[in-house]
Length: 107
Length: 113
Image 1 (cartoon, rainbow over the protein chains, first blue to last red):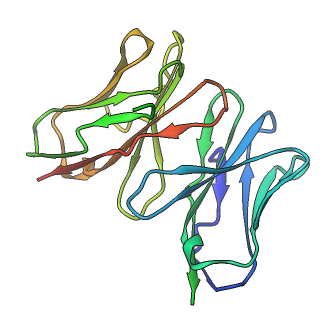
Image 2: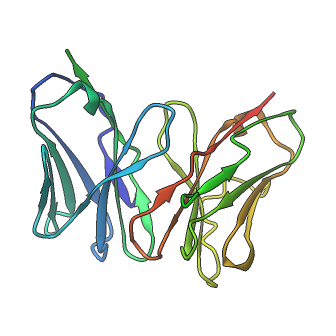
Protein backbone atom coordinates (compact mmCIF):
# COMPACT_ATOMS: atom_id res chain seq x y z
CA UNK A 1 0.00 0.00 0.00
CA UNK A 2 1.32 3.42 -0.91
CA UNK A 3 2.08 5.86 1.88
CA UNK A 4 0.04 8.59 0.20
CA UNK A 5 -2.73 8.07 -2.32
CA UNK A 6 -4.83 10.44 -4.33
CA UNK A 7 -7.32 10.30 -7.16
CA UNK A 8 -5.41 11.06 -10.38
CA UNK A 9 -8.45 12.70 -12.00
CA UNK A 10 -8.57 14.40 -14.39
CA UNK A 11 -10.87 17.04 -13.01
CA UNK A 12 -12.29 19.34 -15.68
CA UNK A 13 -14.23 22.24 -14.19
CA UNK A 14 -15.61 25.52 -15.54
CA UNK A 15 -14.16 28.85 -14.50
CA UNK A 16 -15.61 30.01 -11.22
CA UNK A 17 -16.37 26.52 -9.96
CA UNK A 18 -15.32 25.13 -6.60
CA UNK A 19 -13.28 21.94 -6.71
CA UNK A 20 -11.98 19.70 -3.93
CA UNK A 21 -9.22 17.11 -3.87
CA UNK A 22 -8.71 14.49 -1.22
CA UNK A 23 -5.63 12.54 -0.36
CA UNK A 24 -5.30 9.63 2.08
CA UNK A 25 -2.23 8.56 4.01
CA UNK A 26 -1.48 5.17 5.53
CA UNK A 27 0.91 5.98 8.38
CA UNK A 28 -1.02 7.32 11.35
CA UNK A 29 2.25 8.69 12.75
CA UNK A 30 2.63 11.06 9.80
CA UNK A 31 3.26 14.51 11.15
CA UNK A 32 3.45 17.06 8.38
CA UNK A 33 1.48 17.55 5.23
CA UNK A 34 1.69 19.81 2.21
CA UNK A 35 0.08 20.48 -1.12
CA UNK A 36 2.35 21.08 -4.09
CA UNK A 37 1.47 22.33 -7.53
CA UNK A 38 3.18 21.12 -10.69
CA UNK A 39 2.73 22.86 -14.01
CA UNK A 40 3.32 21.00 -17.25
CA UNK A 41 7.00 20.21 -17.76
CA UNK A 42 7.98 22.11 -14.61
CA UNK A 43 9.16 21.02 -11.19
CA UNK A 44 6.70 20.81 -8.27
CA UNK A 45 6.42 23.90 -6.09
CA UNK A 46 4.92 24.31 -2.66
CA UNK A 47 1.35 25.56 -2.72
CA UNK A 48 0.60 25.46 0.98
CA UNK A 49 1.26 23.61 4.20
CA UNK A 50 -1.59 21.78 5.91
CA UNK A 51 -2.10 22.54 9.58
CA UNK A 52 -4.12 20.51 12.04
CA UNK A 53 -6.52 23.39 12.53
CA UNK A 54 -6.93 23.89 8.80
CA UNK A 55 -5.64 26.88 6.93
CA UNK A 56 -6.70 29.20 4.19
CA UNK A 57 -4.76 31.21 1.65
CA UNK A 58 -6.99 33.31 -0.54
CA UNK A 59 -9.12 30.97 -2.65
CA UNK A 60 -7.34 27.89 -1.31
CA UNK A 61 -8.26 25.99 1.85
CA UNK A 62 -6.39 22.99 3.19
CA UNK A 63 -7.68 20.67 5.89
CA UNK A 64 -6.40 17.67 7.80
CA UNK A 65 -8.57 14.91 9.21
CA UNK A 66 -6.39 12.75 11.43
CA UNK A 67 -9.19 10.41 12.45
CA UNK A 68 -9.83 9.40 8.87
CA UNK A 69 -6.25 9.97 7.74
CA UNK A 70 -6.88 12.29 4.87
CA UNK A 71 -6.04 15.79 3.78
CA UNK A 72 -8.03 17.95 1.44
CA UNK A 73 -7.56 20.96 -0.78
CA UNK A 74 -10.47 23.19 -1.73
CA UNK A 75 -10.16 25.70 -4.54
CA UNK A 76 -12.90 28.31 -4.79
CA UNK A 77 -13.71 30.50 -7.79
CA UNK A 78 -11.41 28.50 -10.08
CA UNK A 79 -9.26 30.45 -12.53
CA UNK A 80 -7.79 29.28 -15.81
CA UNK A 81 -4.38 29.70 -14.21
CA UNK A 82 -5.25 27.06 -11.60
CA UNK A 83 -4.90 24.37 -14.29
CA UNK A 84 -2.08 22.14 -13.08
CA UNK A 85 -1.39 18.91 -11.26
CA UNK A 86 -1.79 19.05 -7.49
CA UNK A 87 0.31 16.72 -5.37
CA UNK A 88 -0.25 15.92 -1.73
CA UNK A 89 2.70 15.18 0.49
CA UNK A 90 2.95 13.67 3.94
CA UNK A 91 5.12 11.52 6.10
CA UNK A 92 6.66 10.79 9.48
CA UNK A 93 10.45 10.97 9.20
CA UNK A 94 10.58 11.52 5.46
CA UNK A 95 7.95 12.71 3.10
CA UNK A 96 6.03 10.81 0.45
CA UNK A 97 4.34 12.27 -2.60
CA UNK A 98 1.02 11.24 -4.01
CA UNK A 99 0.91 10.71 -7.75
CA UNK A 100 -0.98 13.94 -8.30
CA UNK A 101 -4.44 15.05 -9.37
CA UNK A 102 -4.80 16.79 -12.71
CA UNK A 103 -7.03 19.87 -12.84
CA UNK A 104 -8.12 21.67 -16.00
CA UNK A 105 -10.20 24.82 -15.64
CA UNK A 106 -12.27 25.41 -18.75
CA UNK A 107 -13.30 28.89 -19.98
CA UNK B 1 21.62 31.05 -6.99
CA UNK B 2 20.10 29.99 -3.70
CA UNK B 3 17.92 27.20 -5.07
CA UNK B 4 18.50 23.54 -5.87
CA UNK B 5 20.67 23.21 -8.93
CA UNK B 6 20.73 20.19 -11.22
CA UNK B 7 23.03 19.45 -14.12
CA UNK B 8 22.90 18.79 -16.94
CA UNK B 9 19.44 20.13 -17.74
CA UNK B 10 19.22 17.79 -20.73
CA UNK B 11 21.13 14.63 -21.53
CA UNK B 12 20.87 12.43 -24.59
CA UNK B 13 22.77 9.18 -24.36
CA UNK B 14 23.07 5.98 -26.30
CA UNK B 15 21.61 2.79 -24.94
CA UNK B 16 24.20 0.93 -22.89
CA UNK B 17 26.18 4.01 -21.84
CA UNK B 18 26.56 5.18 -18.25
CA UNK B 19 25.31 8.60 -17.16
CA UNK B 20 25.83 10.77 -14.10
CA UNK B 21 23.33 13.33 -12.94
CA UNK B 22 24.28 15.97 -10.42
CA UNK B 23 22.32 17.77 -7.72
CA UNK B 24 23.49 20.73 -5.65
CA UNK B 25 21.04 21.16 -2.77
CA UNK B 26 20.30 24.36 -0.92
CA UNK B 27 23.08 25.14 1.53
CA UNK B 28 22.29 23.80 4.99
CA UNK B 29 19.69 21.35 3.82
CA UNK B 30 20.39 17.96 5.33
CA UNK B 31 17.77 15.98 3.44
CA UNK B 32 18.05 15.20 -0.25
CA UNK B 33 15.66 13.23 -2.45
CA UNK B 34 15.86 11.89 -5.99
CA UNK B 35 12.70 11.26 -7.99
CA UNK B 36 12.00 10.12 -11.51
CA UNK B 37 9.04 11.30 -13.57
CA UNK B 38 8.08 9.82 -16.88
CA UNK B 39 5.93 11.85 -19.27
CA UNK B 40 2.43 12.26 -17.91
CA UNK B 41 3.17 10.20 -14.82
CA UNK B 42 3.57 10.94 -11.13
CA UNK B 43 6.76 11.22 -9.14
CA UNK B 44 8.57 7.93 -8.58
CA UNK B 45 10.71 7.94 -5.44
CA UNK B 46 14.27 6.72 -5.98
CA UNK B 47 16.44 7.47 -2.96
CA UNK B 48 16.55 9.63 0.18
CA UNK B 49 19.59 10.94 2.06
CA UNK B 50 19.33 12.41 5.55
CA UNK B 51 22.48 13.75 7.13
CA UNK B 52 24.95 10.98 7.93
CA UNK B 53 22.30 8.27 8.17
CA UNK B 54 22.24 5.33 5.80
CA UNK B 55 20.25 6.36 2.73
CA UNK B 56 16.84 4.92 1.97
CA UNK B 57 17.46 3.19 -1.34
CA UNK B 58 14.14 1.37 -1.45
CA UNK B 59 12.99 3.17 -4.60
CA UNK B 60 15.93 2.36 -6.85
CA UNK B 61 14.44 0.28 -9.69
CA UNK B 62 17.47 -1.92 -10.35
CA UNK B 63 21.12 -2.37 -9.44
CA UNK B 64 22.02 -0.26 -12.46
CA UNK B 65 21.00 2.76 -10.38
CA UNK B 66 23.15 4.14 -7.59
CA UNK B 67 23.56 7.45 -5.82
CA UNK B 68 26.08 9.10 -3.58
CA UNK B 69 26.09 12.19 -1.48
CA UNK B 70 29.51 13.55 -0.72
CA UNK B 71 30.19 15.67 2.34
CA UNK B 72 26.50 15.93 3.06
CA UNK B 73 26.04 18.26 0.13
CA UNK B 74 26.32 17.45 -3.58
CA UNK B 75 24.68 14.26 -4.78
CA UNK B 76 25.30 12.24 -7.92
CA UNK B 77 22.84 9.75 -9.39
CA UNK B 78 24.51 7.22 -11.65
CA UNK B 79 22.72 5.01 -14.13
CA UNK B 80 24.82 2.25 -15.65
CA UNK B 81 24.13 0.55 -18.97
CA UNK B 82 21.20 2.84 -19.70
CA UNK B 83 18.05 1.44 -21.24
CA UNK B 84 15.32 3.22 -23.21
CA UNK B 85 12.92 2.84 -20.30
CA UNK B 86 15.27 5.00 -18.22
CA UNK B 87 14.21 8.00 -20.31
CA UNK B 88 12.49 10.43 -17.92
CA UNK B 89 12.97 13.64 -15.99
CA UNK B 90 15.09 13.10 -12.91
CA UNK B 91 14.22 15.54 -10.13
CA UNK B 92 16.20 16.33 -7.02
CA UNK B 93 14.74 17.99 -3.93
CA UNK B 94 16.26 19.15 -0.66
CA UNK B 95 14.86 20.16 2.68
CA UNK B 96 15.94 21.00 6.20
CA UNK B 97 15.19 17.42 7.19
CA UNK B 98 12.29 15.36 8.40
CA UNK B 99 9.03 16.36 6.82
CA UNK B 100 9.67 20.01 6.10
CA UNK B 101 9.14 22.02 2.96
CA UNK B 102 11.13 20.58 0.09
CA UNK B 103 12.48 22.57 -2.80
CA UNK B 104 12.98 21.02 -6.20
CA UNK B 105 15.57 21.57 -8.84
CA UNK B 106 14.45 22.03 -12.42
CA UNK B 107 15.35 18.47 -13.25
CA UNK B 108 17.49 16.64 -15.77
CA UNK B 109 15.67 15.40 -18.84
CA UNK B 110 17.32 12.12 -19.82
CA UNK B 111 16.72 10.62 -23.23
CA UNK B 112 18.18 7.21 -24.05
CA UNK B 113 18.31 6.51 -27.78
